[in-house]
Amino acid sequence: MSHVVNPPEVISVPVHGSADTFPVRRVYCVGRNYAAHAREMGFDPDREPPFFFCKPADAVVPVAEGATLELPYPAETSNYHYEIELVAAIGKGGSNISL
Image 1 (spheres, rainbow, N blue to C red):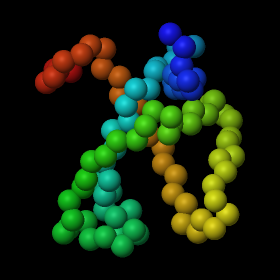
Image 2 (image 1 turned 90 degrees about the horizontal axis):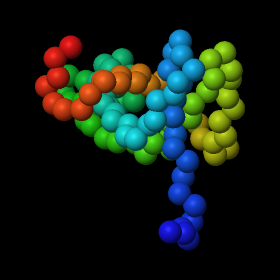
Image 3 (image 1 turned 45 degrees about the vertical axis):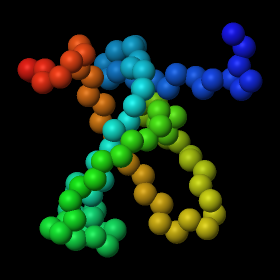
Image 4 (image 1 turned 30 degrees about the vertical axis):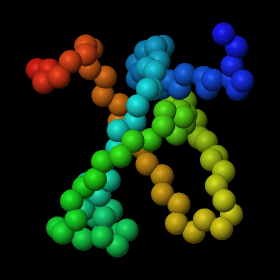
């Protein structure tokens, strides 16, 4: 089958201490779960609960260990926030998996 537009490449992140990579399919996020950051953004963490949202896999920008990255953003941006995410890979599918 041919595509009208080429599908995106599979985004993957390096596995620490290994030559392997881990494919990113979904990025689940929790907002307003860090009280100091919630206050910094003008919210009251005691009154407003955390919220959940997703980001697309191509929002992940892998950077090699020890490397730096220059990420362009609009010149008029005055409040740019960046984050570092943690990947937890569970070796099998399912729910309520014991550790």
